[in-house]
Length: 98
Image 1 (cartoon, rainbow, N blue to C red):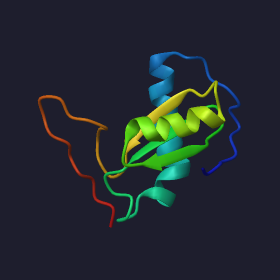
Image 2: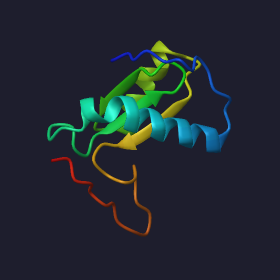
Image 3: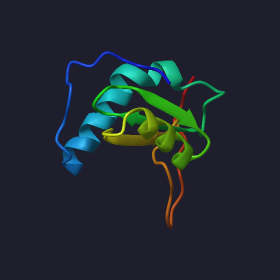
């Protein structure tokens, strides 16, 4: 588990706010630390209240570990180095991490 300091202690469980907060937190504070060749394609689950996160090959494993530590977590997930966690009827697009 990794912890980040967060000025925003809590957010309301609104889907649009969750998406904005998750993308902002990942891009601003976490992405540079985790987007490595070793993590490419893995799932990152982020608690939007605390900034803590877990990385795993499996979405449920990452979210379960995070939720066991933070039962009230509001979780946002990303696939590291890709534009989506899963693709349904399409394909995932790899982003450049060089």
